[in-house]
Amino acid sequence: MATGRSAATKIDWTRITTSLGLKGSTATSLQAFKKRNDDARRKLAALQTQPQTVDFAKYRAALTNGGVVDEIETHFKGWKPVTYDVGRQLKAIEAFEGQAVKSAEETKGRVDEEVRALEKTLGNIETARPFDELTVDEVAAAQPEIDKRTEQLVSKGRWQVPGYKEKFGDLSVL
Image 1: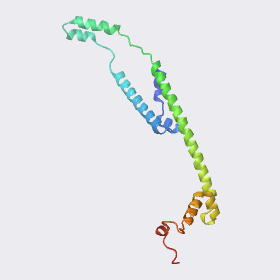
Image 2 (image 1 turned 30 degrees about the vertical axis):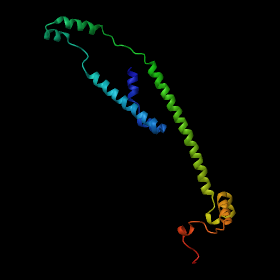
Image 3 (image 1 turned 90 degrees about the horizontal axis):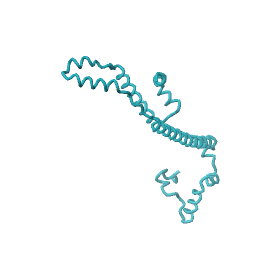
């Protein structure tokens, strides 16, 4: 048990969170666990400072019915701490840990995929030619809906894009 206590005091919670890159619900769960751990350690320390012996002679002298004190003393001396099987709790913790690891791996996969997509987009942006160097055919090949919309407007006899004058002004004065 002393080894368990010394190991528990050496846990660096902030290092765990930062080194594993925990975020979201995983980090929140870890912080809640840390709080419960700290509370339990505080309560344990408070209980360990309390006296652990009972002065039955003092109670016999203070009470007129010494038989009650004798009965309590026999129960007290016969008391043994109950041991609990914590296997079920450990299994629940292991299941939670497995779920957390699985969730972290899924999140890592999604983040890696998004990073690859962003790197590809950044590469496209860096290698793209300036807009003023593009030809109409290149723009139409990149965005076919522009070509379709232009054909539609021309077939209806419209030569100007709706909203163009409002947005950019009338250039016929020039």
